Image 1 (cartoon, rainbow, N blue to C red):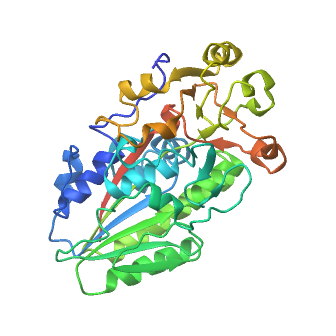
Image 2: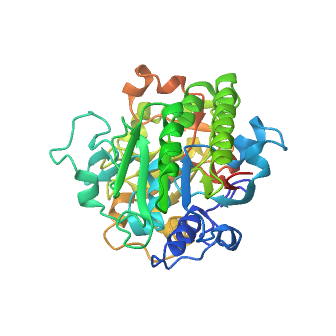
Length: 382
């Protein structure tokens, strides 16, 4: 990348490799490198392995909000990169299937399907909010297998997720919760059962709070400390359990907004609506308008770097293996990546009136705050 302060995905030391390590522990095939530090901790003698994803709890979030001697930070054994875009759709998918975005195709919150920009988690049009005719549109177009979903070994597979989650996990045992306290009660109950288990759990609300209030707001710090305290209590109760805790990405505070939706010169060059993410925006340009598009985009050069999609694929930003032949079409012709000025690109005027312009925290870019995530390992009972 041109900006030395940006963090490129490292697909030998990323959340993909974290997931590959978990898959390897379960005896599942994986072609990605594993993390040696984590692999050493994964002892098969543990009755329970809890694989907990705290959305947006990046390494920099921990450093900014918790002291160095805090429970989470003292149990952090490693730091790895997220994927790009550093967003929940791409990253949690990688954490579930141990594949890079170039392999699974869940590139972003909204993906361009031949002119229809679809929100993958909600199966609806990003711009109109109309639902897709197929309620399983995303999975049917971008199918993948979770490494823990169809496990036939000695461990029972559990998933624990919020009841309002639109995208279910589909494991042998599914447990829903409403709110943080109930999540920890559910995890406690699962861990108490006598059989050996692998438990995948996902908590989303820290991400939501930081979007609304910022990465160091009082509400952010309070929620993070509550999560930490409840985790410590749960771990203390279960000496036969190993907890592996990480995040899909971090967050960074927004400094300003780029209303690209109002740029008539640039919009006139587009064949499809803008897609992907605010700090990793994809542009499908009319065949005869590439030169004009580049010229129109120059006004944003201080805040975003414009690449051709082919450039980024060759750089390996979406994965260190060959791009799936069916997936390149979802990435458009150009991709603009935000820099350390931390601006949020606004795709549609409707966002100006639905609260997105009031966001305080964002992710999807390549800053260290967004890209670096912790690997926290806690042996229960200590």
